[in-house]
Each structure stands twice: as structure tokens, then as C-alpha cells.
Length: 342
Ligand SMILES: [Zn+2]
Image (cartoon, rainbow, N blue to C red; front, top):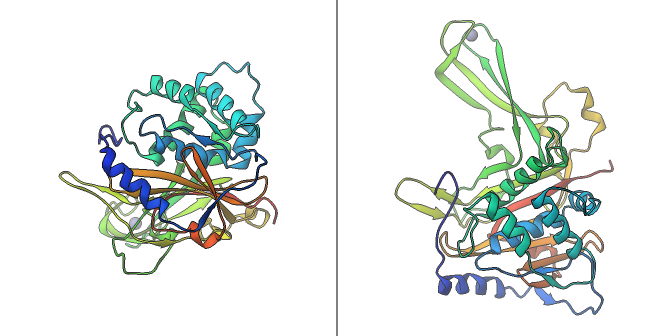
């Protein structure tokens, strides 16, 4: 890791093995329709850039983001948004089965030399940083990125040492990292309360209460603050790093394709609560196979035009016939969108 970014060389033989793991799935049949469908456009791998292709296919299948990007004119004076807008227009033109994202990669590389070719990267870190670059180019405090992706979490600490005062703190999040337990034999469901934010935790004597003026026991918890983000990105933290070793956790997590309910995580006593949908539906999954140093990314995503699920593996796109096959132990990034109608 360098400045929090993963950076390593990839062994091509291992990479081929990781790619083959995806090909073992029998669930996906080849697309046989002759008609081109907008959004079903593969992305050429420019040398270990499957992390980028996978992240871009996730973002491309967020309907509201793509609608806004498609509405941008060609005159926009922002290199990354310009290159991304050109790419999205090509992908959603219904005229191409594959395109080369080289112009976007070039612009991103200029901003961030770490994203060079021939280096495997982390799709989630790329996605997060890419959205941040778009936000920066829009040069205002509130942008389509903050509107769609940003949520707020309020953490509160209640002193149990006598005064019962509550200290609150609010922070902005652009994605939700969830730890993944290393128990491959267990049946695990997506459990948002496993996050550093939502879990209610006792602070045993290590909380300094500013009213009691002493170290006290306290209880810490966190809640989402309304409005909820339109797009919820969940990172299943499968990669662990410490000083002398790093590992990937292959635990299977069962996550819902629809009706993920954030209702129980919203801060209580909020009048707005009745007016918003707390339900989220899955639109994309970035999957990772292989090891930490030699892996491969592909995306499963739902096309907004025909509501069918597809597998996007660089240039290759296949239809996913059985929705049950979307949930695998390879799931790394989950992209949910808020239900717009109650
Ligand atoms: Zn106190």
C-alpha cells in the first residue's frame, strides 16, 4: 500500500486462472439477440485495467448518474467529465458492442499517476476516487456526486457515569465499508450492523465526559441522518492488510437483490421519516476472483432499459438468466439505488 492505495504487479499466468474462474459459471448464456441494446457495451482491457472497467460498468448502470452524464453538452470544460461523458454516450448509443476507455484512463492517469497501466488496482478505491475527481471538476460544494452518493451519519456517545449527557458528531460518507468475517463455513447474510458506524458499543471507562470531567463508561452508537443517499455503495472488505501480510477473505455473504431496508438505521424522532423510501434495490456488483496480487474483476449489472442482468467481463457481455447466480463469494462492491416510488 502506498498512501492508502493498493499497488502491485500482476502475474499474467495467475490472472488467466482468475479469469477462468469466472468462465466456470454455467449460469450465463451468450447473448443471442442481434439487436444492440443501449448500455450493453464492453470495455477493452488496456493492460490490467479490469478494476477500472468493472467500476465503470457499475457506475454506468446507475440510471440517475448516467441520465445526468448524458445530459452534459460537449462544451463542458472539464477533462475527466468530458472523457467520461463521451464514453457514456458511446456505451448508451446502442451502436457499439465494445469501446476503448483509453481517453478516460489517460485523463485519470494525468491526475493520478498511480493509475498507470499494467498495475492491478482496487476497484472500490478507483470508484471512490473517480467520483471525487468528477465532484472536484464540477467546482461547487454541492454537485451531482454529493446529491447522489453522499450520506450523513450521526454518531452519539451517551455518558453512563451519572450525567447522562449525549455528545453527537456528524460525518459525511460516500460509501459504506462492511467487514467480512473469515468463516467460510458459516452462512452469512449482509448485516449492516457489522459496520464501525451502526454497531452500538460500550466504551468502558475510556470516555472522557466533559460534564463529569472524568473518565466514565459510555455507550456509542450511530444512525443515518436524512436525507438518505440516492445511491448506496457497500464495500465488502475482503482485503485485509497488516504490516507484514495481506490476505483475501472468500466468505460468502448473502445480500438482497431488492428491498434492502435502511429504515432501522435512521435517526429516531425525525419528521421527514414518513416521506422517504428506505428501501434499496441492487443495480450492480463488482466481483473479484483470484488472489490479492493476481485477480480479475467483472461486474454484474442490471440494464435499466430492459431490466435484465448481465455480466460485464471487459469486452465480453453475457446475460445472467437466473438472478440467484448474482450472489457469489466473489462479490466485492454492491451498488444499491433508493426506491423512488413508495
Ligand atoms: Zn458524564
